[in-house]
Image (cartoon, rainbow, N blue to C red; front, side, top):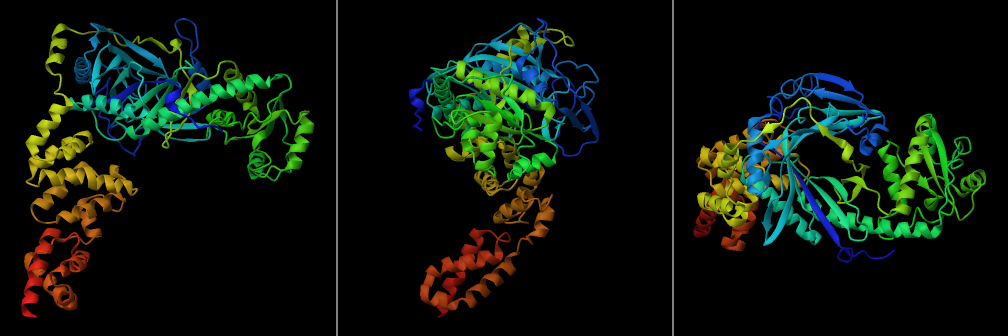
Length: 635
């Protein structure tokens, strides 16, 4: 195993930013996309692949169809209608979404088309009830600057967002329709060659241009980065979908470059091995042979009436476990493919004996398969009707790696920054004209209006925000980049609470609670606003806000009042506070005698333990110091 250096492989990166627009309506109907866990409508579909206008099947659609999933949809009439259920034709294109997309294209100096043609993009994973996503190419070309470097824009599209995945149960995949049809812009950059650590800044800069319009949604899930990665030697572009956080980008680019370079090394090794494959005699049912195997995985599969199959590979000993770089193996590529079809996993010859499969089992297997120590094999627990589909796909993938090097995939980013197989890369047959919506004519007046509404630059917006609210530059950047900028401005305009304190709570306090595993989605905007209103009138202390938010984000309360009751928060009046401080000083005379005014430290800890959330630390500190001095004067 060798060390990987990303600087040696010539990495090219392209970004696809998907940003939801803040129209409060869906793209082709008037429904409001309200997030809810309550569903009153339920229906199911079975989607299939169909030929394009040129008589071709899209490879990604065919591959997805091979999984034979039944799609179950859940809907709430408050957030979806017959359009989302594909029971009614799409309505007229939303005017706000149209206007915002033209402003964004103008801000990026992109060339807007005078006629826009709605298209259908085939999607058969179930995330669209229609089996396609509606998309419109708004403009091409353009650029933006990142520290003096021009990042080219390839295209800007206006399209519908997909349904929200709710989970899978066996052969049933579940989706909620509240997000389906939400308008979003897709911005694809030209490929660029930079170091992985610079990709984050390029994505951040584009996100800031979008946020400067003040017409895009904020928060987790409202913006998604897909990233295209290729290396010089491979020449294949791999699309990685679903990068939710900028922090993932650098890791994803580095991992994917390493994986691609590792696959090229595996390819050369496969060619050296002179791997041979016999389609007529490669897969055999070994259920009876392994009926007494001690592997829990195999025994559980047999109990579920699954079959155990072995697939033999001549001259493949050592290849499934061969690891050119850490975490990159042919066995891992095969396992990802198998999981795509809903199987738990696969055993390969280079990792056995293990997992309850013993040496005696392997000897019997080799004899049964008529293979020797130079050969390899896979063991799969699989429903009998799926065996040929899955084994054929495994063999095709290994053959592709041997002959071509890097399979042309669409992959999914994981939280750890790795990527996993999602589906084959779609082809040209995926796109065809939308027949329910006429072409959209863009007038000169619309173009002029879009240019007039180009937002201020991020630097100008930051400077304006900093001057207006008198907060430091670091906090200004944090609040502008956060999902709480509009809420921040609302609170500061509605109350007299210090803007610095409001920004600090929204950017630091909530973030720190999230890092400790609490859910900020449970914290509704109206509760945040109300907490600052209570602070302004003196009903709670500054320290109370974190306690209240913690209680709500932990799911223990739904409202401010419930959280205050749960945590026994109630502001102490001035006279009662004086008495409590006097008692603390009286009880701790020895500490005051020994430490004099330095006793403020330990006494502050004692006082705040009793008064946390009931009085501000600043007030407690002043009263303690006053009473300590008074006590020292009387000793």
